[in-house]
Amino acid sequence: MAKTIVAGNWKMNLTISEAQKMVADLVSLGPCPEDVTGILIPNFVALKTVADEIKGTSYKLGAQNMSSEDQGAFTGEISWDMLTDVGASYCIIGHSERRTIYLENNSQIEKKLKKALASGITPILCVGESQEKREAGEAKKRVEGQIHRATLGLKEEDVKKIIIAYEPLWAIGTGAAASPEDAEDMCKTIREWIRKGFGDEVADQLSILYGGSVKPENIQSFLEKEDINGALVGGASLKAKDFYALCQEVSHEN
Ligand code: PGA
Image 1 (cartoon, protein in one colour):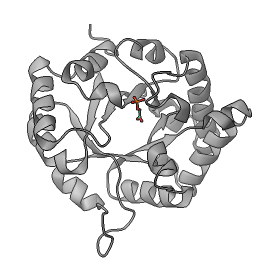
Image 2 (tube, protein in one colour):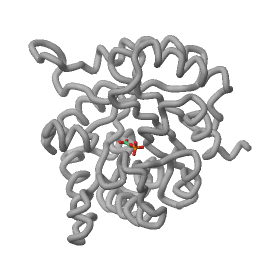
Image 3 (cartoon, helix red, strand yellow):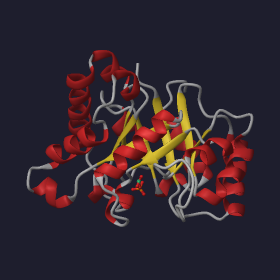
Image 4 (cartoon, protein in one colour):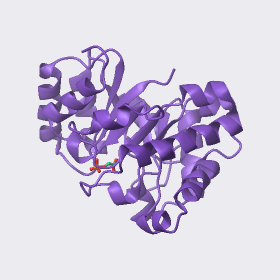
């Protein structure tokens, strides 16, 4: 069965001291429900602080990006072993802000995904279409193409380790989330695409997240859908009480 996941992508927000306070507040609110994987994804300089604060809790640590190289003359990059060393076990790969603002292409994303898999870091592969592609009726083609390129040559046992986040570009940071029906339609398409290429077992246990203006008030409406197993949350993951609420909302413990 697919795991329920709430991942908080802090993007370029929160200084080290703000991050420390956020996580201390979060932990003081209570534990992450046992049936939810709550992942905090701070900026690189706050990773160590967050790692220290979540010690002894079930919250997990992730990074927002990583290099496809192991080490060396790559100014401004971060390697998998630096991430592993600091305690990050997840990494966002191919976020739309990396693709559109920093012009990361499918081939770079494929290399990063493979490096994450080879180094034991769980990749959160982001895919999603622009407003133009949606209006042109090409949303599914775009998303399937992105997954196809990222997973080229991978085996079932690799694909099994990937988390896929469907994040339509027009819903990110706009306050205008996709409708749960449209999000489900795309997440189902993703699962069926994976089923065709990698079989039932991989498809059925694949966690597919929806991302784009998710908040505590609407997360349930997405998670109620059959093919949506969690959320990748930006803006609403920055405050302790909101991230705590997001994790509580999707738990079946309450
Ligand atoms: P948002 O961002 O929740 O602020 O829309 C989501 C994301 O970019 O992962």
